[in-house]
Image (cartoon, rainbow, N blue to C red; front, side, top):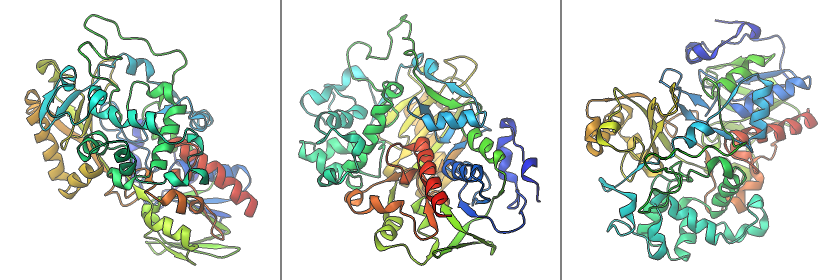
Length: 513
């Protein structure tokens, strides 16, 4: 089915219906475009809009049957939870500006989050451990004063105290090349044992698969981005867990019985886009003047000094003066590029790391946590990984769903089971740890980013040595092939990094075409 660009209108209430559109959901125009943009995620859409605003004719090719890329909302699950692209904060200036341009309302979640800072339950080896008992618990592998730290706070404490340089904003500078070592090497150099690292970094890992495949400079980049957004994440650790320190009294951020929760600091933004974050790329797609073709998976790119050709797996061929590729390198490495990029850039495309993440979104028939007296959220070292209660109901404390985050090796493990068996495992493990939940949980949605053929992982991860060897070549134009996407950003991460990359690549293309 073909339709005019102006006829393609999707409201937030029916956004999920995008999945049903055919590969020609956007009508083909006459004549070749000036630029082909591969990928209809945030970076690709923003690039296309910017180029159009500067007078160029743009064609967007998207392999999926939806727009948004890794910004993916489960519109059919209560509360519209996010599978990717969760929140924005005060330093997400480009995202905030994009929302205004595209008339998408930003909802500030800070008041609701601060009203619900009671934290999560700790389960190690299948055993529930009270935070006040953690300091002296035999399962605590940490030493000295570090025994007072919750597992999710241990690595952050070491990074804060011992990061060998403070100029984190310039994490990629050649002056810091000597620190392009593994996080494991860094942690062991400061006395950490394998048992400490396994629990304190590898479990519910934020970056990479294990501490062995993450560069310390990657960690510095992440820490820099956390620092500039510090107000928005002060209550949360690098893994998304509530940032508590075990204590006999309620930890900071967890009000005691009968005590009102502290209000969110004035001006603090923990933002989401009304109705679901995917509504932003949907609104951006509606503003395009040119064509956007869904279900158009790119299989080959040919470029020379003055033109480009893109071939899709459906056999269709498109020509333009230039191509902008927003595909993550984890999928671009399966696309034939002729001629090959220069060796360092080619190596980056073939080897850049990506974190495996699999999510399960559970809906409870009734609030079983009121029966067992525990928080609905959990931090575990088992298949459940990190469980976060999503409170997006009519009241601030209404739990609409529970998100299970399997990361790193845990994600790879559940992925090997196949999705249906993985769902059964997650429910069974939940019922084992929380008997009060038996028979009450339904998996309303699930997604593996590593198994997603259009992602092959979530956000990009520099492995040891890759910042020094590869980073500078990642976004370098290859004749008439240009690159964008969060993996090419250097000053910001996530959704903001996507917009940063679109800003850069748009200038490169406008200067070349």
